[in-house]
Amino acid sequence: MSAHTRADSGFARFSQGFTLIEVLVVVAIIGILAALAGSAMYQWKRRVSGRSAAIELQSALDRARQTAFDRGDVWVIVYPTLGREEGASAGAYFLFDDPNLEFGLGDMPAGRARYSTFDPTDRATMSSTAGLGRLLAEVYLDDDTSRTTRFAELVQASKSMPPPFDTLVDSGCSFCSGDPARGAIAFGSDGSARFLDGDGNQTAARSAALGLFDKSLGRQSVYYGIAAPTGFLMMQRQ
Image (cartoon, rainbow, N blue to C red):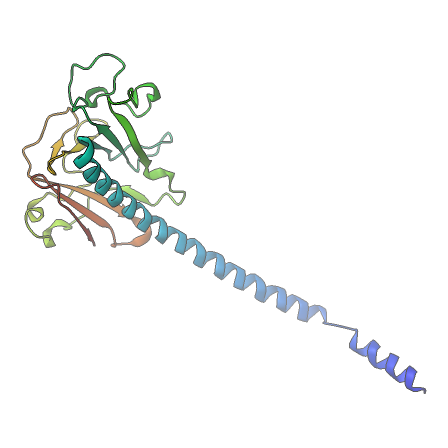
């Protein structure tokens, strides 16, 4: 047998490649790894979405308070059971700029945005003409595709917080009332905050609470306390 023939024979044995069983084992391993990676990614996305919702709410409250120093009143309107989609009830909140201090009045001209008739579904009156107030932001918690974050009562959340938050009733929104429930925080240019119920009546409370729960995080939910005299905001994770 010539050297050329021996080389061809060796190449033929080498070119036979993997057996069917070997290929199936490799495919099975790849499938298992892909499934594990997909599950880990899904859990990571759920956890990130919960933390993102908490950070976004804190940023909204901070933005409202800071903007009020320069612009006049800024309102944070909370609907703890409102959803963008039909049947959704995770909650929503809105920031409204009120430089002329008119949003809280009940005798505004028709078509002008005011708290007593504020309707998130009415796009025509969600903002007013320049200088008369405007919608700064709107956030629906059910926009989170994992559907895990919502306003909710946080049991025992306030008990470990310092005064004045230690006497608050555990609640998703301690100042909200009505059906559907709603309430508002109005940050003023002097740094203070006042709390209004669903009918627009100012409460006598010197502090208020918001609770945000994310079931993907288990007990690691978020509780916010807001102090009326200074607008001071404290956030605590459970």
